[in-house]
Amino acid sequence: MSAVVKSNDTAAREIAASRVFDAPRELVWKMWSDPKHIVNWWGPNGFTTTMQEMDFRPGGVWQFIMHGPDGRDYQNKSVYREIVKPERIVYSHVSGPLFDATVTFTAEGSKTRVEVRMLFESVELRDRTVKEYGALEGLRQTLARLGEELSKGFEFVLSRTFDAPRDLMWKAWTEEDRLAQWFGPKGVKTFHSKNDLRVGGIYHYGLRNPDGAEYYGKWVYREIKKPERLEFIVSFSDANAGVTRHPMAPEWPREMLSTITFEERQEKT
Image (cartoon, rainbow, N blue to C red; front, side, top):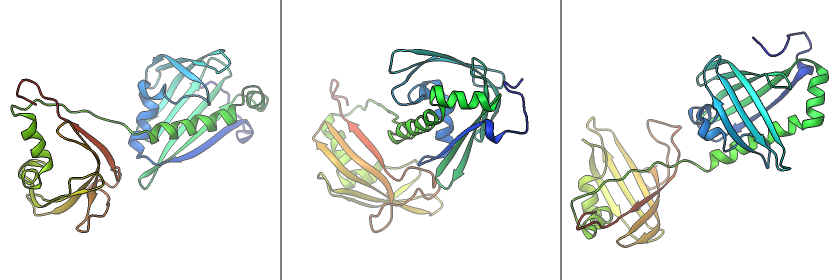
């Protein structure tokens, strides 16, 4: 059941804000639907959030405490009404002030537009919420914080121990002839491998799929600490070593930071 009674004065009872994020829709959706992400950006500037419950399904309860910069705590409870992945989330704020919120996610190329509309029981309640709680500016600040969180990027970590000494593993990652023997997915062949191993230098390579399709990639070195650490910016590329979009996934980030560490463990790495 909705938290508010519908009437003809919808526009006067609404608070709305929208923002375009430089991130794919699936990622922005995850920021709204995963409790470990939403606590990092929810609320106006200076607020933090303690998540108590987030049952992300129609009929599920979303309950949390917002901690204001002045030390005050604000208990919030909402009930999810509609979830259409990755297009729309509708929930009712039932702990007061009462309102229904509709959040829409629209892909705009590789970016995503998020629009939030909050519909209150009455014009008076809407106006009081804006005046006493700064709800409109708070909503704008909340979306800005989401943008800041998205700009941080996300990391994933892979680790494996090889039955080889560290010096040999270093050579496998830094010598172009050795890189050409193993780098790339299974079944993919390297037809071009040129490495300028220095800070600011580029490893430029070309790969050929089993179906004959060819594509390029490159690393731009930011840190080289032999034989312990490599750090570089990785991207898809072209024959001229430019930066290009992923040929099969245009929403893929244009550039990513990669860090490779080499740790010696009893003649293994």
